[in-house]
Structure formats: structure tokens, C-alpha cells
Image 1 (cartoon, rainbow, N blue to C red):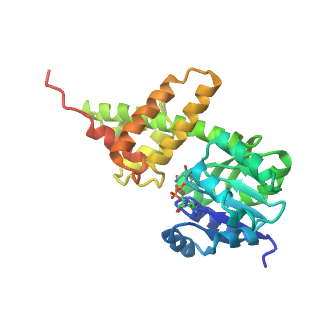
Image 2: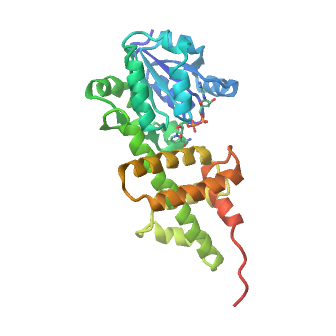
Image 3: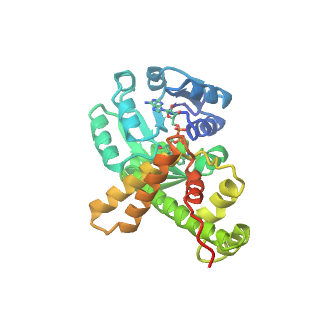
Length: 296
Ligand code: NAD
């Protein structure tokens, strides 16, 4: 048995599989679980043993969840196979981008079973998961944070954002920013291109000017101009995060009109693109919705 102990990992998708591999690479024994056989194959390729859900819970004092959303998290936490098999005092870390209001409720629910739930969503994409350079934003009390820290730091830079739910809050707000600037960046670049400018040249200028962002520095050069549209982050997952953020903003009384408008635009694109589209494909959607103007 490893001196580092065992970690359970539920959700071995685009992000989960490389994150589990990072943890194992630092000496922990990792037991994985996913509902999908495809994911089991991906985990095996990453050197992660896939077992049944109750075995994950039985074998591990710390279990990480990397699932699509709060519904999936609630279904695992509400699964008797999982909860009954967890040892008293177990720590569950939800690294998915979930809804903070539901996270706080779930944390109260599992606390009745002497289980601690904290949130630690991530930013940095599949590339960051593969390199172990994610930004990990934690919502936890000090004691749970100290307990989670050694495992979390195997995957990237760990920041304590505040109490339970704080990580999920800042993650949703971050993605509202990210999606909104990808959209407006794309409007600007597509318009410049149709006006006769070279997008490479425009990006070079934006990237040393005040218009720069993750969209100009990373997404456009790596996933749009290459034509690959394969960032590994789904458009519908981004929409989920935007909706969480807009609801949160609404609940605080801050006027959230730009965020709400960006979310409505994003929802239209996702409806056309379908549930499997990469989030960078919204640029192709915008291009397809550009219309030819009559010559002056
Ligand atoms: P994904 O769809 O690739 O992976 C999710 C995995 O969860 C799938 O393998 C699915 O089979 C599994 N799953 C779903 N329900 C399950 C259940 N009840 N029990 C066990 N397994 C279940 O998604 P992803 O891109 O890896 O994203 C995971 C989370 O991380 C999401 O909340 C997403 O918003 C967030 N996120 C993704 C990225 C990215 O770049 N992909 C970046 C940061 C955050």
C-alpha cells in the first residue's frame, strides 16, 4: 500500500481522467468509477483502476467527484451504494463546476452522516489537467482545506476562496467572464476579417493591448484559427456555468444585464450546435450567422 494513501475518483471524463492520473503520479493509489465504459477505457489508458462505486467509497478516505453538474453530484451522493460504503469522517471533494446553492445544501445533508463535502472546481482546461497546472478554487473551512490540500496540490495551484460553496461561486463567475469575452472577441475578429483584416495580425495587436484575454491569447490561436475546435470543454457545460452565474448575480441585486444577454445568445448557439459541441464552436456558429451586406 502506498504511503500516500488511497483516493477515490468518480467521473473519469475529459478532465477527470488526466486529473486522476496526476494524483496517481504523485504516489497515491487511485480507485476510479464512471457510469460510462468509454471512460473506463480512458482511465485504464491513464493507469487508473476502475472499480464499482461502493468499492471507491469503501477503499478511500478522500473521494473526488468530477461530474458534469449538481444533478450528477446529487445522484452520486444520494446513492446508497456510495453513502453507506463511505467511512465515518470521509472527505468528499466536488471538483465539478456545480451550483453553489445546491453544494451548500448537499454539504448539510451529508454532514448528518458524518461526511464532509467541500468544493474545489478548477480552471485551466484539459491541457491544465494533463500538465497538473490547474487553478483549484476551494470552498471549505480551514480544517477540511488542510486535509484536502496535499491531494489537491498534485493537480495544480490551490487557492482557498472561502467557506463551502465559495469555489463553485467564483468558478461560475469566472466562466461567465470567459464565455462573454469569447463571444465579443469573436464578433470583433469576424467583423475585422470581413472588413479585410488578417485575424492573426489583429490578435497580435490585441495581445499587447487592452483587449487581450484568454480568448485572444489561447482560444482563438489554438482552437479557432487552427480549425480544430477541440478544447475538450463542451458548449453546453459552459452554458450551465453561465446560467449558475446569472442566477447568482440576480440573487445579489446587481444588475446583470450583459451577462444575461450573453447567456441568452450562448443558449441559441447551443440549441443549434447540439449537446456534444465544443465551446469554441460558438465561433463557427457566429461565422455561419454572418450575412453578406450589399456593396456600397
Ligand atoms: P465530461 O462530460 O467529459 O466528463 C464527465 C464524466 O462524468 C463522464 O465520463 C460521465 O460518464 C461521468 N458521469 C456522469 N454522471 C455520472 C454518475 N452519476 N456517476 C459516475 N460518472 C458519471 O466532462 P468534463 O469536461 O470532464 O467536465 C467535468 C466538470 O468539470 C464539469 O462540471 C465541467 O463544467 C468542469 N470543467 C471542465 C473543463 C474542461 O475543459 N473540460 C474545465 C474546467 C471545468
